[in-house]
Length: 324
Image (cartoon, rainbow, N blue to C red; front, side, top):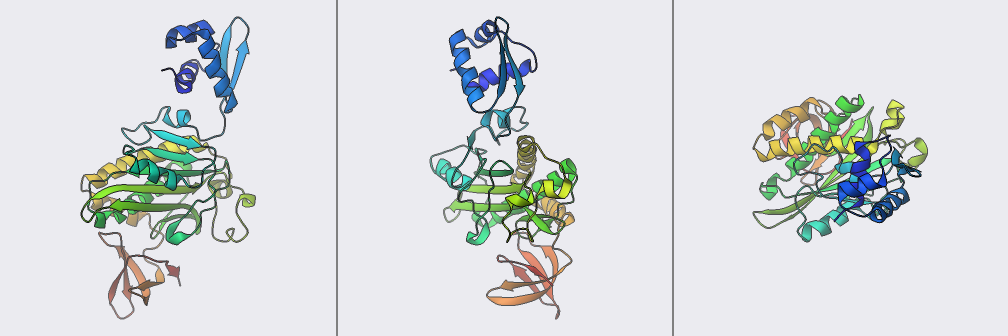
């Protein structure tokens, strides 16, 4: 069955040039009326398509929306993003991805939205999702690792996001344990992993990533402006969110495969090289007790290793870290 995506792909092959309705119809094996129907539907979601009588159609602009067809186009992955569910608005991309995973969605299925009304972060916190300016994405994973190793996925994803922003955007974006990416000390990206598992087997993991891309200060609530930022605020450049998401998916798949192959030590080394937390004096909690000391390293299970002033080594598995 011919889809909007197939018509769009045919127009993209000749982007900026006129393509006749007859040529499109013949290439796709449909009637010219069917071509017109798909052209109309593409216009309805924001594509700029000129019509020149007796000559054809020409793609002239694309909407600044997170659209399935745009995400798939040119995506260099084997699994991640082969199935994409894109929404103008949804409650939470992770909720949608979780429901899809329960229904048997394949690994690498992506759920993305231009706006979330109930986006969430770690420890039950909300994640503000201003419309049209951020990347709000959840990914269905089915890792071949034991449940106890699932925190490694958060570590792996943080490396992908940090390296992407440094190499593709040109911003130093170190990782703040356990799951945030910061620029100039302010949060720009958050990562959340949620697992469904039996005692010794992982059924699915939903990896949620929120990245503040084109937010201006007005898009951040007053209480967040002291602690959060965006790529636009820090770099002064508006970014193509779809292009950035595609590069992120490509890096995520590469590093995820590295994790699945048992090469987590290499990921830890890259995490450590990009860490905001290591080497700093921190205050946190372990087993309900306050711990203060120097953040020394990352344990194999993703725990933060802290050496206290008396030389005791403690492993922090959850909670917040304060820098002192």
